[in-house]
Image (tube, rainbow over all chains, first blue to last red; front, side, top):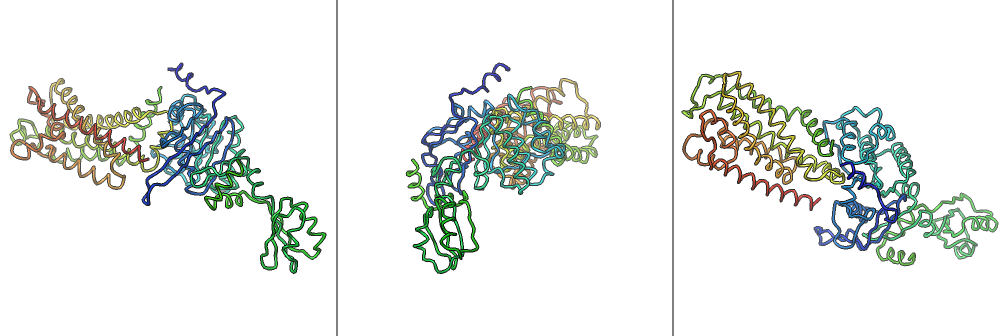
Length: 322
Length: 245
């Protein structure tokens, strides 16, 4: 038995943590078939922290279900550390926090974690997980006496106690307040720092931006962009300058160095810039009466809207990257 | 300890902490037993069945309590499906087989408790049998519960939590009634109907007191057919359910 346990966990260096090839899945919906995932190719190396970003219905959860072996793909293949998803799950190398789910009753938080730890070949010590997830004060409480945020922390602890090589989180911070979110990501950072592969689905753009090494942007079942968060932001053109500047023609503003385009918003103008440093210097030198100046970084939000707002645009965007 | 045993241990712990469940599979049959059997403790042949009232109702109500214990497994499964726990377990190394084994063992543990408790209650009302009859009776009860274990799993995968309570409640009441929990079915249509049901043979375990073959071929075949039928249906319901998740 022990030999078997030791035999299944080690993973080979050459295998990617997740390898999806031409993965596709279609559901029967009330209004005909719905293409949840349409031929995606994604490879995630071990040790990466990757955000699967996209609006509802983008195909994130379906992709995650397939990676976890909860659903088979219609076509294409999914491999986790070089093995079939179900095999990776039964070998105990995958831990996951699903999008929704309550906890079973009549157990304390500690008992529940002990039970879960008992199902895995190489779990972390339960007490260690209790302290790293800040559950010390709740450990002896029954699971039905927890708030939504507390339940979410226990669910993270359940995923962590399995000591997985790959940790998959589907919309993990939905039920958390700002403080809870910060604590959650602090825990996740230490997990990722331990060399684990972390994949999380989110539609909180700032989370993908702040915590992922890499963002896989999905829309309509396709991958529309894939790269570091900074690269995705750069794709929609740096920063914007907004200023109150009456009586200056837009055509003159478009001529300024570093400016891509200019728009009128009442008395204000909005300049989209490739190089905002250069543009602001030129603007202040030429138009001394410019006031109420704001410079904003293009949040991932903008990239998100631009890349996912229209299916065809999104496909073009993908092709232009490739 | 292996994963399967650890899981079973916590399943037992959870079941024993569920007070409502305890009441229906233990307290309720016990109270009814004393209410029905105590006034009739001197009836030595209930409805000319040759079985004393305390013995007959002891097994009748054991049958009721153990049926509840087995079928309530379905309630636990339906609840775990609804709250998403089944999905959570499917991404652990715990095998489906180990999951069901834990559920069935837990049901049997609860049923075993019901049996012991009702035996003690029966003895207190004067039920006295040779040791081998107690053993034979217990063996028959445990075998007759197999179809109910499968029925519980089947219902757990077919019916949602909200309608499960009324469904199992109604089903157990009907099966208990037609199986002869409340009075012996000694002749006529009700007996003919009862003999094709698994609950009838559960309750018939009390016939060990008469000596000889308790079930006969008919009883064994009936229990086997229901076991296979519910077993196949439980398997079908489970597979259908996992496809949909």
